[in-house]
Length: 112
Image (cartoon, rainbow, N blue to C red; front, side):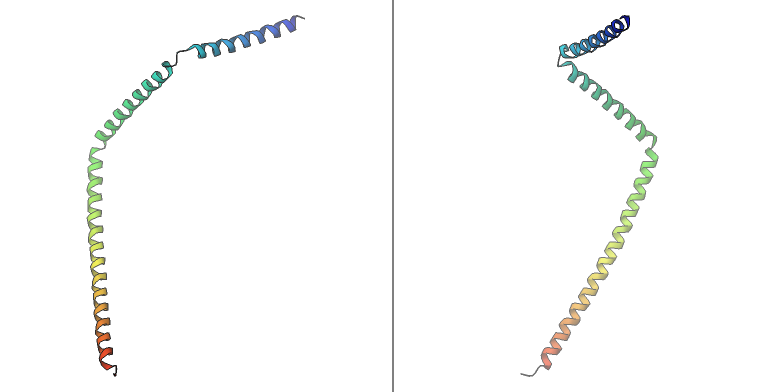
């Protein structure tokens, strides 16, 4: 009998604790949660900003050298592309000229 009483007491205590937590959450004011979330988000954003500024200061030289390498690679790529386009344009012009010249000769040979 004592065992049943102790089990009932523990069950009642657990149920009371759960109901108390639920009532506390339900009676809590609504604006407090969004305000708390906004405050934490703002704090996190500020921490991220500080970390980004610190990282930028620490890697300033590396960023500048990487930027210079990127610009050099871009200029080299532009030069190579310009050369390729120029070569293709010249080949097309030669082929068009050859086709026109062959067409004129073929047109002259054709009997009427």
